[in-house]
Length: 119
Image (tube, rainbow, N blue to C red; front, side, top):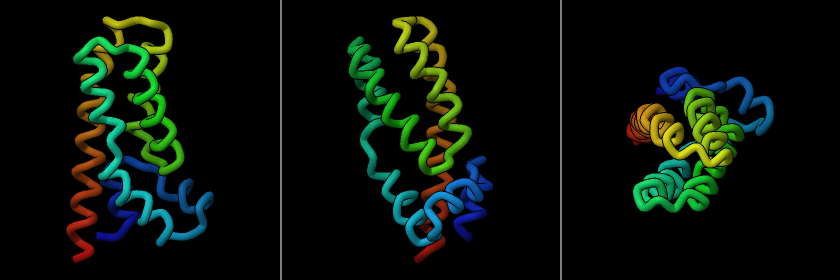
């Protein structure tokens, strides 16, 4: 699997991220590091514990990382969640997190498939 095929699989914007970072090797490095990022785990635990400010910071971090890496689908759903958390709309945030969960899993699974093809 190529990096572009990985981006296709996760509905990402490969062309945008390559135009900004200018190096497929650099993009690959950061895409693979996404698997080690703990922001999603923090988002989940913070929301479960009702720590809404902490959940907002985690969601905001995920949004920024996704924007920088061109993970368009996850960025879109997480952006909506971030705004609900910013507004203090807990019920909406809980509802929106379900879509973030689906998109996060799709993104991580696609990256893992890509990582496995590198061996």
